[in-house]
Amino acid sequence: MSHYVVIGAGQAGASLVAKLRKDGFTGEITLIGAEPVLPYQRPPLSKAYLLGDMALERLFLRPESFYAEQSITVKLGQPVTAIDPVGKTVTVGDEVIAYDQLALTTGSDPRRLPAAIGGDLDGVFVVRGLDDVDAMAPHVVKGKRALIVGGGYIGLEAAAVAAKLGVKVTLVEMADRILQRVAAKETSDYFRTLHSEHGVEIIEGIGLQRLVGTDGRVTGAILSDDSEIDVDFVVVGVGIAPSTALAEMAGLEIENGIKTDALGRTSDASIWAAGDCASFPYRKGRLRLESVPNAIDQAECVAANMMGGETAYVPQPWFWSDQYDVKLQIAGLNTGYDHIVSRLGDGQTVSFWYYKGGQLLAVDAMNDPRAYMVGKRLIDNGKTADPAIVSDPEADLKPLLKA
Image 1: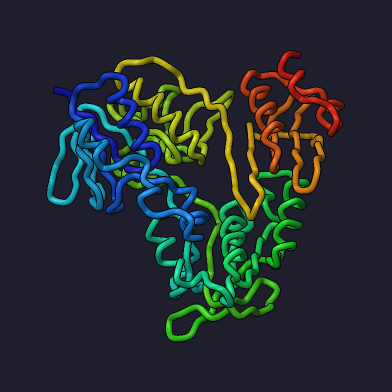
Image 2: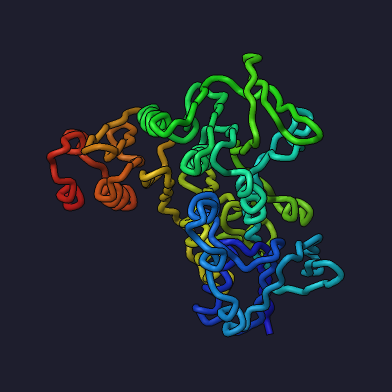
């Protein structure tokens, strides 16, 4: 009987093992996770869960009974320490587990501040796992002072939750503007205004020089312009890196993540990868996507291919971010855009459409689900949208789908 082992019990790993059973795989399945809890949703951690609006049990992707009913062995709180691709085994503690096919869904790791600049002080947090948010929660209370390092979506979401809970928030972004790496100036301006209206101080073009503390706990920060601020805690949101340590130990090819072919197979014919940790062929280059939809879709594609399928993974990227009462929905990838078309609605409703040479690449839609839906369908089908229609707030977007 074949044994398929999956390392990484996050969204991708949980999706992969469920898909294997759904598609009729009758062999053994083992899912191994380093965290001591069942696979859970990460996006609500720093929002609904931290706000107290979502209980722990609601975070779980599936109940414990699902894995038992599907005859999926789940090993939690037991990180894999070694992979032997020649002997086709993985080591978990004192146990050596043989596999026929192995999938790596190891996700990503948050970038942390170096200890040399105070990154190891108590009160300095990242937002990635359940333990991170549980450790942070007692500090995120009314009257406290927080420094958020990084003006990407992770940092902005953390700032929004902290501000809603009555924390005095200062956010520093060393780039010229927040969201500079991932969004147009128009989207940056929108969210800067939104946060300012909620009392968040955003400092752009200035980085963190170092954190300072007393008795091992952070008490302040010195910025790159030598200014100083007092803080009670710090949230570091400066990006994530693919978790490739096990793959490197196994001798797999690495290229901005674990390098796979279009099917999800790594440089070892018996090892596959999916989710945040995997890079795959895309157009004329390679791509690695950090999103829940990608983790699910790619993992399900890999599951089918592990069973003998030959389906290339073709992503249809989409993302989202919740900040205050604004839902941002993003369709497509804006890489290489040369023109932005704005569609203005009422109040906080607006969408920004990214074009390159007349071709629609992506849409950022704030509280505008119709614009997002139309834009996503156009992008997924390789179509574009007449900028004159897009920019007219009175124009109906639906006819664009029939063009």
